[in-house]
Every structure is written in structure tokens, then in C-alpha cells.
Amino acid sequence: MRHLSIWCRIYVGLVAFSILGSGLTALTGLDPGPIKPAAALLTLLFGTLAVFAPFEKRGVLLCGAVVAIGAMSEVCGIYTGWPFGRYAYSSVWWPTFTLPGGHFFPALLPFAWALVVGGAYAHGKGVWLAAILATLLDFVMEPVMTGRLRYWNWLEAGPLPGGAPVLNSIGWFVVSLLAAAAMSGLGASKRIHRDAVVVFYGHLILTLAIGAIGQTVSKVAQ
Image 1 (cartoon, helix red, strand yellow):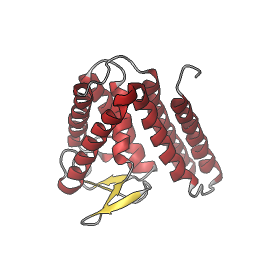
Image 2 (cartoon, one colour):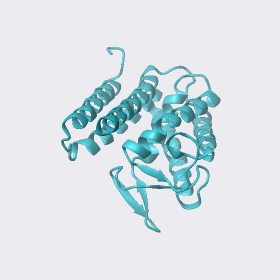
Image 3 (cartoon, one colour):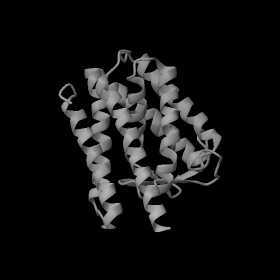
Image 4 (cartoon, one colour):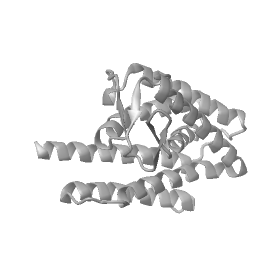
């Protein structure tokens, strides 16, 4: 831990807090109230900061590029079904604002793209591996985000985890590849960044933990 930046240490602490909080909520049935969305917001923001801080001054530009690509792809997906398939966000992922036509759009959604793609890129193996890692992480996220967290739902269910269509994985790979290519084109270093890699796997562990807690609660309830 001592070799990690202060941003990454805070992120790791927030991940641990979120896992413990989810477990406590499941055990006691207590409503965490505003603590839950606040913890989610801080975890994502500090995680994104930890991912891009190692890129120093160029980090703002790199983060902005991935945020823009993620946001544009999601807006296109919400209205057209491309490149991910037909889906809709709920108002659960706070803070959320409403787009024309009554579509919900989580304000932190583009930063989630930045965290995942930036963390995948920081493995230092190039844009193709970054896109593959990001897409694989989505396989883990889908059943948790659509099930336990209810962040979005698929309007046309598919055969992949969480009811995602095959098009979703294709879309994730293409968008992640474009975002990683943008980072490379803007001069992002190809060396491994420890903090960003920790954030990537921290997000994986947090997602798996929330999913496991949800499954345990469901089995107990039955």
C-alpha cells in the first residue's frame, strides 16, 4: 500500500468500505440511505483520479477523451440501440438526469468508462489487450449492475450474463478499442501504471463481492 498514491489508497479504502457496507446491509436489512450512493460516487471518482493521475499533466486530456467517447456511445445506444443493443437506465444510479424523450442518463456513467478503459490500458500491453480486458470486465459487471444494483435493464434480453445481447460485447470491444486508441494517439505512456491496475482489479473485486452478497441473500430468502 505504501507504494500507491494517496488517491489509490483512498479508492482501496472506499472499495473495502463498500463491500463491508453491502454485507452489513444484507445481514441486518438496514437501509443505508444516502451513504450507499455517496460511497458509489466517491469510489468511482477517486478511482478515476487514481487511474489518470500517473499520466500527470496529460491525464486530464486522456480522461476527457475517454469520457467523451463513452458518453457519446451511451447516448447513441440509448436512442438507437447501437452499438450495445436496446437498453434503458433507471434512476437508481445517482446522480441521474433526464435526456429528451424521458431517458435517464447517470452523470457518472462516462467516468465509469474512463475507469475501466483507463485501468485496462494501464496494463501496458497496447490498445487491443485494453479492449479485450474491458470487454471481459463487462461480462462480470452485467449481471450485478442489472440484477443486484438495478442500474439498467435490457429491453431485448440476450444470451449473455445479465441478459445482455451478443451485440453488447461487440459494442464494448469497439468502444473500448476506440477509447484506448485515443489514449495512445494522445501520447499516453505504454508502461504499466501500478495505481491504475490496482483500480481495475479493485473494481472487479467490488463487483464480484456485491454479486456474491446478492446471491447469498437470494438463497437465504428462498
